[in-house]
Image (cartoon, rainbow over all chains, first blue to last red; front, side, top):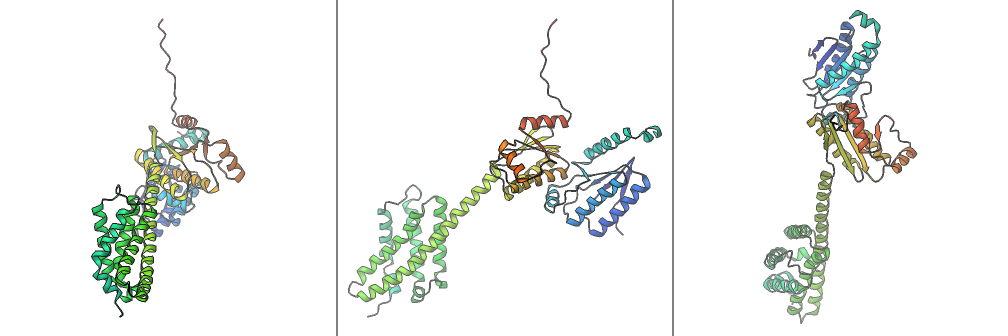
Length: 131
Length: 287
């Protein structure tokens, strides 16, 4: 069974999609990712889709779902490296991926996550005392 | 005596051609600036050859006869090339119709003594030549339309420049009406440029857009959303008072889009996002 690897990087999870996603793979990714967020207590999820050249409404919805699910589990989602054609397709399909942050590349995505989580940590006294 | 019209005309080919060329040369619509006389003669000869070769009783009766295909092809070629060279419709039309005159002249001479035959022949020739004339016009207009389409493409290409105003900031001034086709080009150019330059902020300046209706607003919102998906921020600038009025009257919600009055203030806002500051250099006052 094909699976997309989910890497843990400190408080973040890193997913790079290197092949074209088919529906089964996408639903697997969705459930695996939510499980991982729960298990590791990750605060951020970064999905790199720079190699993804084809997207359909199902894929768009899965991305949106991952964002919303992570959100209610207190993790921010950043999708990075979207190709112009993919962006145009998603907009034409009416999927704006609300609840998902976007960045141009992995580096900028990481910065964005640090910023978001960093700000949260300051507000959270429990985390501060733990560190 | 029942003379064969096609045979007769074929026999008189040289005379017809000469007479036709003569007609064209004396006509005041002759455009020597666009086409040399040799070229004109070559073109005319090709057409007359093809036409006379295909002539038969069947052709006179049926305008769609397959024998006429080569003639139509040549005529279409001539007509399209003329449209591109800038001949006027009148000049192109007269070119074909002067062939009719030439044919009639030859017939006049040949069938002087047989009014019935002359009448029949002229009628048939008229019908055939009218067909050719209509075809000429159709292809001429097609040629013109091609020219217009090409120009439209060029204008769209020219009119959507993406400018890099700062490291990481792109500006895209839009001038003229936005329609779906143009929005598509604008969007593609902008997104591609964002990828190429790795910019995080794009400023869409619409001070050159004459009017915004719900459709244009829809297109703008789409562009902004697509930019966001790519991970860049999009600012719309240059919203004039009239546009602000129409947008609000139409009930279009632009509240989740950053809008600025001028390109300058959009740039200032962009600097703010990138944590940059523009300062006047203080002159060192020597103690």
